[in-house]
Structures are given as C-alpha cells and as structure tokens.
Image (cartoon, rainbow, N blue to C red; front, side, top):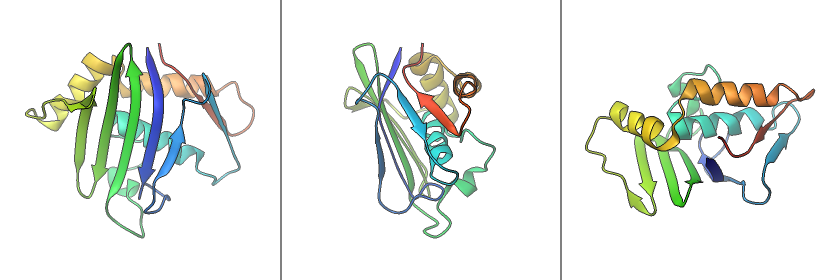
Length: 153
C-alpha cells in the first residue's frame, strides 16, 4: 500500500520559485477543496508528474514549467510502501529524475524510460492510467470541485 507523506513543488505551472508544501500525514486521508483557480488541479498535476513524469491533465511537459521563471520546475513526492521510505525528485529545465529508497538513490544507470518502468512495476505497482482512474473515480462522488488523496491499494 502506498502511503503519501509529502508533496513539494516549485516553478510548476502557476506556482512560483518557493516551494508549495503539502503534508499528507496529518490525517488518514486528505480532501482538497477550493475555488476555481485555487491550485487543486496544479497539486494533482504535480503529484502525477512526480510519480509518472506526466501531468494528470492533458498538458505538454513544456507547459508545466512556470511561464515567468521558465526554468527549475521541481516536484518532490515522499511516500512509504510497507517499511520502506521513498522520495521521488523530478525536474524540468534542468531534467532531473531520482528515486530514493531509505535515503539511498537507486542506481540510475538505465535510460529514463527503463528507470520509470522500474518505478511503476517494482515499486509503485501502478501505472499512470491506473492512477488516473483511481483519482478520477475517487473524486466523482463529490459535487463541487475537489479531490481526495489517501493511501492506494
């Protein structure tokens, strides 16, 4: 089971050059609610990008970088699976993709596509399509603009 701990992002979509920090440890699940334009979708895109290298919505990778700063988009996702602690670091301009397990970086000798495959198949045991379906189906029961983040599987 994936238990999300934190999500941090900066220079990602409309967020600026200081980190937006989301702490998922304060409760078993987190309900995100806000007015249009408050950043709910940006947060979901950042989580999806951190995990899978692509946003939740249909946005090109180039569009993910803050249009004013035009560089140093960075997303960090921390979670646990069983007793293991993971941290994913992804960036655009410069391109960064790191997988950390229990404070040690997993060998990056393979191509980024293979590194992503290792993440999805061996660690997350979840692909982007499944993630999208869980989030979309999970949020369909709400009548206003919101979504819930909790443990998966």
